Image 1: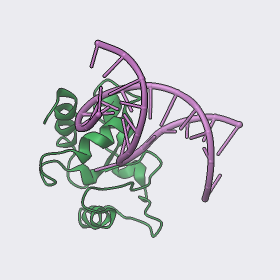
Image 2 (image 1 turned 135 degrees about the vertical axis):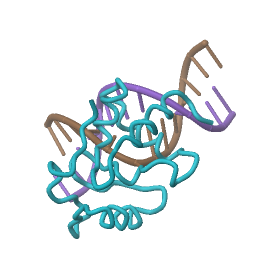
Image 3 (image 1 turned 90 degrees about the vertical axis):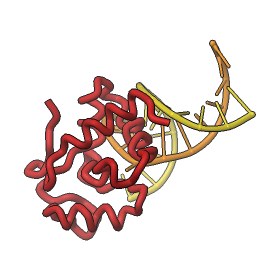
Image 4 (image 1 turned 180 degrees about the horizontal axis):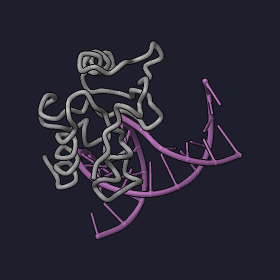
Amino acid sequence: MATTFQEQVWNKLQEIPQGKVTTYREVARAIGSPKAMRAVGSACAANPRLIAVPCHRVIRSDGGIGEYAGGKQAKIDLLTTEGIAISEANRVEHLSSYLYRFR
DNA sequence: TCATTGGCTATCA
DNA sequence: CTGATAGCCAATG
């Protein structure tokens, strides 16, 4: 069941342009709850369709990949396909260059 | 309605 | 690096 909070999260994620990424923290801040990054993660995990929302473009604020409903390996593969460089330690390289900031 | 649990996290010791 | 704590939402009893 989709709640308002969930819809806000998904709406924000769909704003992320291809080839860019954002963090759970930024999303949380964008929806008005800077401390709800954990809830954001739960929201993505409960999306109606795995392909309905680009949750693979959301990473942890420390540069880590984090978890993914379809498997973190798939997340890494998707990001790589979109042009994001991932190191062997599951970390995003040059995060500052790829980071998308909400307005 | 309230209490408890758990999660694709963040931050600090 | 590990462990503990914090803060938010959803599901369950």
